[in-house]
Amino acid sequence: MVTANTELGYNSKIEGDVIVSRADAVINWIRTNSMWPMPMGLACCAIELMAVGGARFDIARFGAEVMRFSPRQSDCMIVAGTVTYKMAPHVRRIYDQMAAPKWVIAMGACASSGGMYRSYATLQGVDRILPVDVYVSGCPPRPEALLDALMKLQAKIKREPSTGRLFSA
Amino acid sequence: MSADTTTALKAKFPQVTDRPSSDHPAVNVPVADLFAALQYLRDERAFDLLMDLTAVDWAEGVSPRFTIVYHLYSTSSASYVRVAANCANDAGPAVPSMVSLWPGANWHERECYDMFGIKFEGHPDLRRILMWDSYPYHPLRKEFPLAGIETPLSDPEITQETGTAAIAAPMAGGPFVAAPGEINMTEGEPRAKDESWADRRARPDQTELRQVKD
Image 1 (cartoon, each protein chain N blue to C red):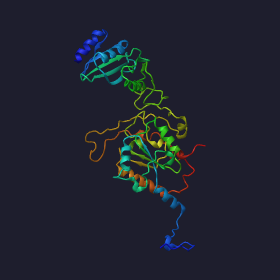
Image 2: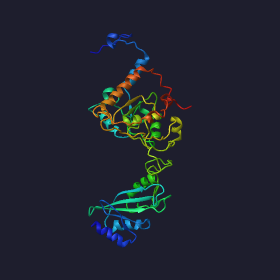
Image 3: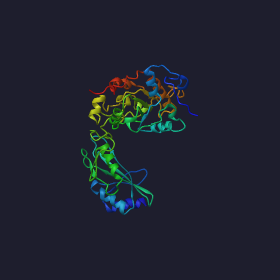
C-alpha cells in the first residue's frame, strides 16, 4: 500500500540525516573516489598496469577502474614505461588535452628518472615535461605499489583546495 | 651445401672473396656486384629469407669506414650465409636497396639509414624509423658520443612550453660498480662511484609545468 507523502519539509527519519561539511571536503571526496586514469602505457610497466586493472588486484576497489583512452575524459595520467624523446612531445600534448583538474603518476624507474636507459634516445624522467604528483619505484613496480601510489594520490587530493587547479593547466 | 654456395658464388663473381668467420660461411662482395650476387643467392641457391641487415662503422679515418652485412637463410637447406660489402664512399656511404628482392628489407634499411646514415639507393621510402625526422645525427656512428648530443625536441611548441630538450646523459662512472668485498650484496646494490650527474642539471620547476601559456 503506497501512501501519499504529504510532508513538505525535509524528514530526516525518511531521507536520512543531514551532514554539514565543507565544499572542499565534498568535492575532493567525489574526485578522490572516481579518478579516471589515462593509461599512458609505453613499455613493460603497462603490463603491470593491466594487472592492476584485472580481477586479482582490481583498481575498481579505489574507483579508478575506468581507463579512458581519450585524454578529454581522464583525470589522472599514469605514465607507465619508458618515455623516448620521440614520444615525449606527444605525451605532453595528451596531458595538455586532459581537462583540469588533472594529476600524473610516474610509474616505474623509467618514467621517474629514465631508469636504466641513460642514453641519447630516452627522456631522463617524465618530470622534465609533466608535473608529477606521485613517483612509483620499481622495474616494473608490483601492482600493489601502483595501488599504493593511487592511495597516496587520493590522500594528496583530499588535502588540497578543490579550486586550486581549476585555472592552471 | 654452404661451401658449395660460396664456391659457386666466387665462380660466378670473380671479385668475391672469402671472409673470416667463426660460424657460418661468409663472403666479401664489392658493392657493384652486391645486388646481382644477392639475387643469385636468392634465386639460384634458395636463400629465400633475409634474416638481418646491418652495418659496421669501423671508426673515423678508417677506409673503408662502413661495411654493410646481410645474413641470409635458406628455409629449404636450413643454412645461413653472411654477405658483407664495403661502402666505397666513407663520407656519404651508399649501397643498392634490396627491397625489390626481400620486401622485409624495407624497415631494416630504414633503421640502418637512421643509425648509420647509409643511403639505400632505390629504396621506396627512405625515412628515419626510430629517431624523429628532424633529428640531425646518426647515433650509432663512432663519432656520436654514447651520452648523446643536446638537441631540441621535435615539437617547437612543446619545447617552448616545457623548456626542455633531448639532453646529453653521460654515464659518469658507470652504472654498476662494485669491487669484490666492498659491499655486502645482500644488503646493498652495486652503484655508480660518481653520481654527480644525478643533480648536475636542475629539473624544470613543477609549478611552471602546470602553468597555461599566455
